[in-house]
Length: 431
Image (cartoon, rainbow, N blue to C red):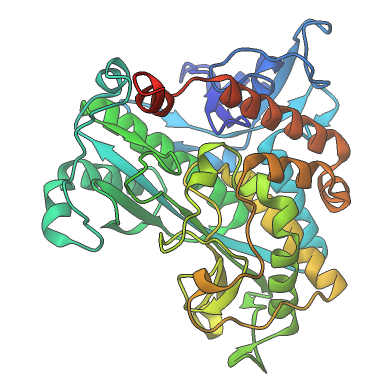
């Protein structure tokens, strides 16, 4: 049984198959509430209202969502179930990532919509094991590929023993895979999972990541979902696709022509809201210091909030037509928390529909050359925008915003105190 914390880890317990169908299903299990206040190194951080030393670090209740129960085929005789984080007798913990997305899905339902989503998640693969990579200080790793392999069939055939194993395990574990492909970096891959409703898609996203990591570990290899693991290599993205549906029909597709697109007002206003709120929601799409190093010109990662039809230079790319019409947001990196990214996107787009927010004019050409609608380039700017956002506090609650801001500020402070390899290489002898 597992849930996802703010740092994107899957945390939980392993239970006995003989007992879980009874007491496990009915009563769930308990975990220490420090899990939503720990940093990336699992150290508990002070200053949170949710859980702290003063309150004794009590328990949260993990309530199994049995609709997520599936065989985890990459592990022997193992099933996996995702959980909602609750307080005993007091309902869901608002600060838990899955709670945030569930609430926005409910908001969409109240407006008569079902949110459908997909995430295109990229990662780098290495021939070193995770332990070997750690012992090397994550330097001098042997990438699985040695040249750009975007759509390349020969190089990806060499990596098929690992990638093919992952695809089959995902399929056998109830995560339908459409395809996989090489990406722009050396040893960089993308596995595309079939779209579904937003909450189930976020669940598929985290299961996909867990499967990839654990299969790599079993095969003596390693992977990273860092947004920008190497200065000289491409970043890894998580392109988010969203559409709204009503009565089993795509509510974005219609007969009105807008910038050459046959669409509805719902499409136009959802796009307008998503884009308008992006600067203050940026911290939910890019929540690490490293994430901001991905946004570079001519890098396939966006630097502006422009939108265009089938334009990969823009932060928002419109794709498909008719039933397949959807919005692709290219802002999140592979290190994003899917529950938070989907929640921010849904809240923003639904707000656009409520307020009939018009998007800017469609960009035609190279979005890297425009000077309007620039994305935040530092995590500090994103934190301040999120902290000051009345919209974020209305959509998620002030307690959630304050909790997340505290998490982000601690991560930024840890980075600012760290002495890096770059500094030693630049200054050790020459200064």
